[in-house]
Image (cartoon, rainbow, N blue to C red; front, side):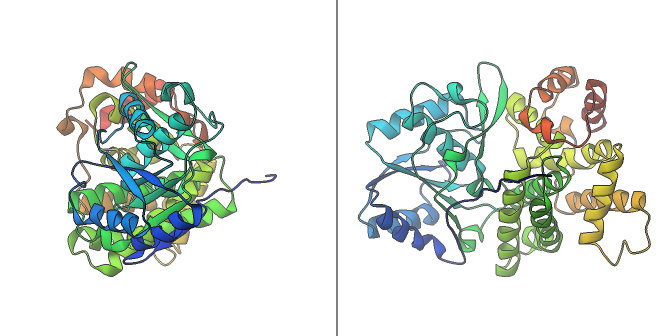
Length: 384
């Protein structure tokens, strides 16, 4: 491999109470008014109030924007851009998980440019974007440390994965205190999302040593901390998962994801399902499909050796690859994300459509194995 380009947020804050540090960033940049992008369920909580206190300490105004879905749509983004301009904002603060961060990234692009978010589909389509401070309240998406964002095009019933270096947050905040009361189901879904990021980044054809090391570290932390964070969360497990998802975000933000994300995006677009849960359901069978490629089997085996060195010591390459996938499936079962797609409302008659849409997803280009439509349909059917 030649030169590998690596990108990350300009700064990051970690630790309990670290959200109060945003006021220093605001002052240093001489920012005056924020569009505060957060979900309706968070808008009246102590989490958002802590952010507002930090804004007030920096003598900074804000306008609140909560009108977006868990899978943000083109219409949500365009409305958010109108709100940004109407309120004369000069930066954004997103508070929440991937939905808030992705929506804010898209808003920053449209507000700084012209037209609608549909004009910016693809990679690096903007000339500029407004500064974004991303405050994370979940441990899974890694969106606070990447240039990636996804938006559902309602007209085409399709989820687009975009990437734009201009939307990299100027400050990422991982305040574990904000995650302490996260519900078990959300902890599980977002945690499995982070695991999918790390595994797919490790196996990406566009990765490098730095992304592989970040991904392996993330996988180790997730296997250590996700189950405790779901069952009996404490500061240690919350910190472990926050760091894990950040490392996974850095890994996939530079190496890309793959087949599992490409399939998951379509479930979110067509059925408006939680992204992390979809990834969790798809990951074991998607991984088994991927390991048909000899190089993929070697990567799964290497990742297994890195994460489970003692258990895998005397295994063959194939056995290591199988063992890693089995452990992923067992973890999903332990945290409650091993579900049937039919339970979530997925219909057998839509599988051909879901497969067709999978091939249009940008993440698929990073995948180490190139499945055909029949193989993708088989994966979907096996999980019904």
